[in-house]
Amino acid sequence: MFKSIEKQLEVIKRGIVDLVREEELVEKLRRSITTHKPLRIKLGLDPTAPDIHIGNAVPIHKLRHFQELGHTAILIIGDYTALVGDPTGVNKTRPQLTHKEIKENTKTYLNQLGKILNLEKTEIYYNSKWFSEMKFMDVISLAAKMTVARMLERDDFTKRYNSGVPISLHEFIYPLMQGYDSIMIRSDVEIGGTDQTFSLLVGRDLQRDKHMEPQVALTTPLLEGIDGNKKMSKSLGNYIGICDEPKEIFGKAMSIPDNLMRKYFELATDATLDEIDLYLSAHPREAKVNLGKAIIRRYHNEETTERVAKEFDRIFKERKLPDEVPQVTLSLEAGREQKLWLVKLLVLSGFAKTNGEARRLITQGGVSIDDNTLTDPSLEVEVKAGMLLKVGKRRFARITINNTS
RNA sequence: GGGGAGGUACCCGAGUGGCCAAAGGGGACAGACUGUAAAUCUGUUGGCGUAGCCUUCGGAGGUUCGAAUCCUCCUCUCCCCA
Image (tube, rainbow, N blue to C red; front, top):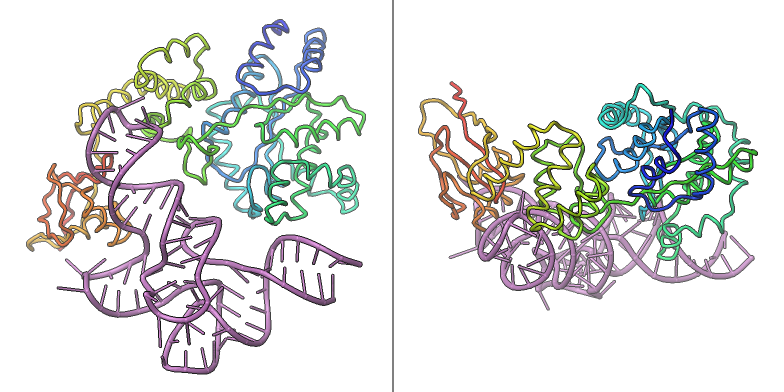
């Protein structure tokens, strides 16, 4: 029922950074084959940002690989750890979430996870199940397993400490909690981004302490955001969400820096390494088109994928209009001469938040109506149904009018 | 418990009585060039129908013709000593 160790390793090791330790994994695989028992593969999720993007989807896809190999995928919804807030990779204390927020986030999360995992075959645990029942004494004994020196070894803490950014005591508890999860669900392997390395290793220590066989720590690379600079994250707005509109995904993919293409191919698409080499040997723009398609293909069907790519060409290569221009409906008094201050028009149609912003866009030549660029911020325009408003290079709206009497 | 240093716009950070809607950088937005890439150049970046006015510099009071800047109290953070 299981594939050979070699075949499994090939899948498992695709696109990862580290495996601690590989020998132990081989041993676990061997045992699972002879005993016909699947391995228990753990992935912890922090229900803080309810939108999954192709960056934090990387470890989820890795979990899926294990699932496809016949192992047991286990999701830990960190509803209790979210009360702490993962200190990893951030240079400040995360806000603690309320129960209500966590509940809502979790719901959205599970919906999205279904796009990647087979949830019917996935064990899902909420870690509040065990943490909410702990006594203070239990917390103390857990905390006793960790030393301050060891905590401070962590890069992010060291940096914060040295630069005088506050570290709250409870943040030290986070990795311990994550490790404790591993004990509770008896994980054989835990998957996490490289920023999770420390926590994954703590899990090993805690399991050993309980005389369990330590889990294997598997780390996946962190994906840079579409700005090509910082780690992809929702709060930085540099992400491609797996629930984004396909055309959004494509557009965002087209705007990533060239040197990131290989990484995106490897981590965010199902393309084989050979296919990737082939794609990348073409002109960078062609390569990127294929990248955009490949990302969409993971979450949408082929027809959608092709349609989106064609539409993109029409807009940006041939400089024509998209198939569907968003409609903006304005309410105007019927029967009057329908003139509207251009600045107001931009605000009303949602292209600018304030009059000042609208003025700026106009002055800088970013606004056109029916292909005529308008640069006078004091201009009154006659509003006609069906006229085309364009702001910047990529924002369009077709005006419709709703007459009020 | 004692001593010291701080909190400035989306972020970092200068400014220590009027020339301050507040330097500089980053980011973001717009324009040029392009492949919605990178690099580069230009402009904008509190609000207001904008040569003017209104509200901002942790919070609340106060001094002053005038306060981000001086004083008092409060609050949050960092560092050192114990």
